[in-house]
Length: 99
Image (cartoon, rainbow, N blue to C red; front, top):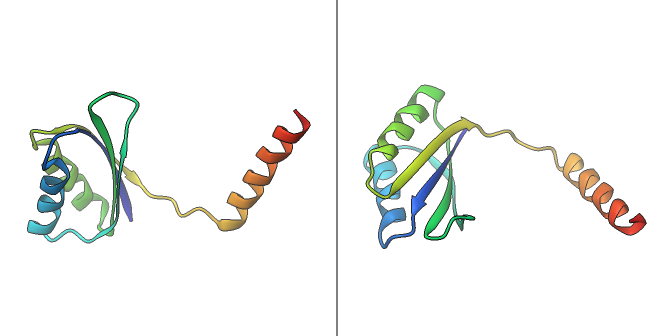
């Protein structure tokens, strides 16, 4: 699984165009999330695809050609272990409590 992270202009239809590229080229999308970024008028789009790395790089190149896409970064999507996440949260809470 490869995760693509893109910065996209907050324009009507921008996310639809990203989905259209994935659909028309038959990429297997496993996850899609859209959040505001720290930059005004820019969205952070996170896309996980179940594709080999070379095919994911091709998708990144295709997304970069879209008018609303500012940048795209591709990398492996690590699968975190649940116990590590719970331990990390407990450590953060302990620091908060002890000050």
